[in-house]
Amino acid sequence: MAKRKPSARPPEGVVKGPYLQSSVKRRIEALFLDNVGKVLSREQILEAARDPVSGKEPENWHQRLSELRTDDSYTILSWRNRGGLKVQEYMMPHTEKRLGAAKRVKPTKQTWQQVLDRAGHRCEWLEKGQKCGLREGESDPIGGGRVTLTPDHKRPHSVDPDADPKDPNQWQALCGRHQVVKKNYWDSMTGKLNTYAIVQAAPETEKRAVFLFLLEYFGYALEADGSIRKREGS
Ligand SMILES: [Zn+2]
Image 1 (cartoon, rainbow, N blue to C red):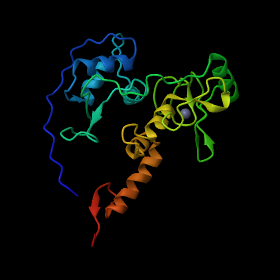
Image 2 (cartoon, rainbow, N blue to C red):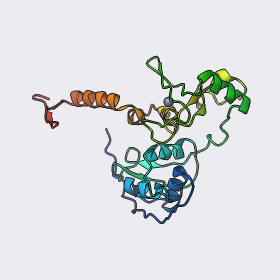
Image 3 (cartoon, protein in one colour):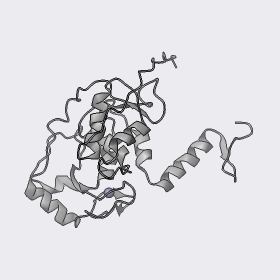
Image 4 (cartoon, rainbow, N blue to C red):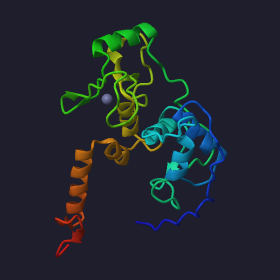
């Protein structure tokens, strides 16, 4: 493989706030717009995302960050796609929104009501034959906050851009976490399966299974005391 030139490290960002926007996503957006081309750490994002009234740190900031990419079409880079960034660091290189997501079709109000009735007001995400089943308004045990269901076109936008807003069979109700999981399956820039995002959104038990698989794959063993050892001969 050709050696990649290490990218120069961009300058550090600063939290200019206070950010008084009413949603976590908008406060994170404001922070990034104040720091275009600069590195922002997880701590800085948490600080900006904090509820301006209660001071509470949001548990679901990472999901909101993903939505800025998937729903708002911003480019936000991390260590995975930008050399010079460390794990838990992020950067918005410019404020241009990616094309294509701007005119995303939504179901009509009536169609959405039909979908919700069919779904019993529960998330319809199917995994290993089991529905997610999170109910609208319940507290979300994984994503944090309250469950909000939103419409998802079953076929990815990149595959079928001509969604019919009046056909309930083309739509499903998904909770916030599963919206992000679905949208992150494919990286819209490269068209590749986004393995990292899938693992990141997976439940703890599956993350652990992947972790153990990777240890095995790379020739490591997990000791009873939690330390990791390189296996003999590998
Ligand atoms: Zn769900």
